[in-house]
Figure: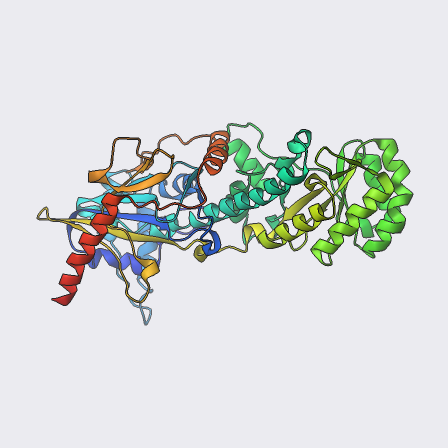
Amino acid sequence: MIPFGVPLPLLTDSYKTTHFELYPEAKKMIAYGEFRTGYDKDLNDRRIVAYGIRYIIENYVSKPWTLEDVALAERFFSMHNAGYTQFPFPKDLFIKFIEENNGYFPVKIEALPEGTVAYPRVPIYQITAENEYSRLVTYLETILTMVWYPSTVATLSRRSRDVIEAAYERSVDEDGYWTLNSRLHDFGFRACTSVEQSIIGGCAHLLNFEGTDTLSAAFYAQFRLNDGKPVATSIPATEHSVMTAYPTEKEAIIQLLDKFGTGVCACVMDSYDYVNALDNVLPIIAKHKLEKGGFLVLRPDSGDPVEVVLLGLRAIEKVFGADTNKKGFKVLRGASIIQGDAVTYSTLQAILKAVTEAGYAAQNIAFGMGGGLLQRVNRDTMSFATKLSKMIYLDGTERDVMKMPKTGSEKISLPGEFVVIKNEQQVPMVYPREAGPAGENLLKVVYDNGVVPKFDDYTTVRQRVRKEWAALPPAFDVLSPELKEKIKKVKSITNVAIGN
């Protein structure tokens, strides 16, 4: 039983508990999970960061089931069918693997290494179930499918880094590039539906940046995924409650500078009147700030994102001055802006465009992304799905399985058992297992009837994301000629069967 008090057999959709009665008997069944599209259906950049299977395997799949779990499930299912009557579920199969396999769910799962950069149609994972347990092949689909969330957040975060990096290339000198890793800060903890979501999504973001206020994710990434080596940082900062606790904003800022002004600290500026705070309060505290010698970050938190950022940059330049870098852009002295309100992938682009067009280097602006980072995504953002792909029946007959709806051609699934092997351009290509070329299969066993191999540490995963994302083209046809030929064959056979 997991901490929420839900027995493990119930970590699936209701109808899946009935499929043991509906699937044909088989020696082996195989299913796989894939993204059907790139981020937000973008056809120009279809790269995907595959991330998050480790959390699912370690926290759910690898937990041994108990007879108590089955008893609780049986009690629940006794009243779950229409009319609060008995609902079917594979009680005997559950008891069998509890007794014979120490409670470990009887499947093998292969998956891409954490942080692998791939494309739509590349299997993210592949599930194999055999013999009497074959009909449980998709029982774990519900929980495994949740890999869509960290993968989507990691992809969004990575694409956001591309936008920021492009602005850096235009406007920032090499000696200012050290600031890049802190330019997108996770403000999303309070936007999450649960602490667990904050950990999963927050860790996905940290693959690409080092800034976060989501302490749950920062701790988990460091101590659960990275052997205690630090992963993320933040800075002291005020909030509106701090600012309004003082009779004047000047007093609040002086307190901030007295306590943290020798380092980097941030101050929200719009508790009352943002323009007044910039025009009148900032000049008053300037001397105190300069005496402390640190770096002050100003945060607007309302108004038009582009407008308030430009107002802040101009106010800082007026009070503290600026220098022109080698690329001809202004770098503010000892202060900058962080925009943490209404930041999305699109507003990020608009703000950076306006900042650089106004002559300021991109290092003068950082971003705090909350709901736009951890909440404004869903399973359809990159269209994740799990489908059955191969059957070996009791008589040994093999059949490659495809879904191919005429009313939804974008939902076609792939037939067979797969390997994923990089081509000469290092692009992960999908092959039928029986026709794959020589080369390393990227689908690695991450769970095998209870055995869980050691996962790469977080630093290694970070490095993989950065290296592979930079090396791969924005889009690529990843279906091998061998797989395309199999798809044609299966379509032909299926059409004949439908005609009969």
